[in-house]
Image 1 (cartoon, rainbow, N blue to C red):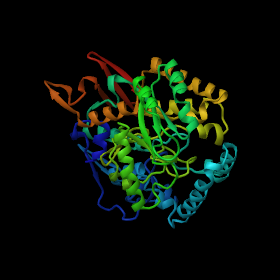
Image 2 (image 1 turned 90 degrees about the vertical axis):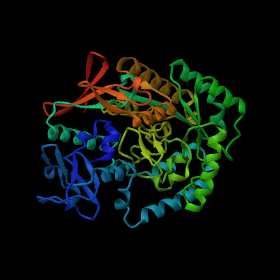
Image 3 (image 1 turned 180 degrees about the horizontal axis):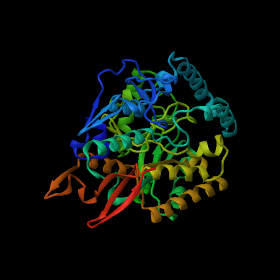
Image 4 (image 1 turned 135 degrees about the vertical axis):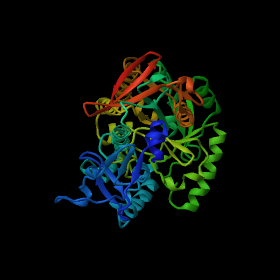
Length: 458
């Protein structure tokens, strides 16, 4: 049985009919689960047919029988390795890249306060050279975890012999996907632009969250907090002082985490994002907030490499991770030098195709000048149109957090031959059915009592 499969689909446990072969290797490595899905973990080996082990496709080793599916790897282990970026240990086996990045990071943050944006972006472009040659995770959106789980439910359909598997739909009220807009406030200039940014967001009916740095960088007037809440926006904590050293040592991290927890309570916040998306999931048990937004989906253009390879929320212990799944505004404008919504629209399209969550990071520090403001307004218009035309849920992070936690407690129950949902917020939940159509996975979503709407999965 795969616990993560059941958490993802929220289907009856009878359909999680998976077992793992006994002869899987003790050595972790990269392999493929089909030609287009890269995995990392322990797996069984078959004939390589001249391939390298890292490109071996283990899909032919799957065995499907009556109400049973034997996998050549542990699905929960592989999914966790991707979500928690465990595969990085294989990419940087000697730790040399991590050590070099740590030295560069320390030097950079010592001089960063004195560097204008023009100098910073030049240094960052130099540091990121070759990013577009990295094959994994897949740019501009990686949904490997979702693809693995889709393959598993396809095998479950074959093993069970049923035409369709019922599950609790991913989002409330039958929404097809999610978009979240979040604002990391890095400087006093950004703080002073928050109200104007709220005005712009409200002109398109888009509420968002603001993450404030609690120490050293700037003061936060109580009036700003009050206005933000009164207008229906959300307040979160952004690091402690944004100096790049939060995860420098475990002892220092614990000291800072205790202070971050205090600010979470003082801000009456439920969410958090670390500075520059630095992260270490092994230390997250020290945090006391409800959700985190520090894991990028693909981190090729971030200071810390990696990527969680999914566009849906997942748990790191008791904390819910809402990954950053789109390019940040600073990255788009200053690293890629693109003043266009083309990349954002492409990412939204890819994410929506698998019914995921588009999580945007927009800095008031960089977006309020005329040229970037125009591009951001085009993004807001695009999201507003997608909400109307494609039933995309534009939500605050705290709303997504509350929903995903409620969904985790729900269950599908048989009731006189029909399925119904029990649990908190079940009145907002919808039943969907996974089925195969000409070999492709399709979701049928029950929007109303007597109607199903087909939701293809790319």
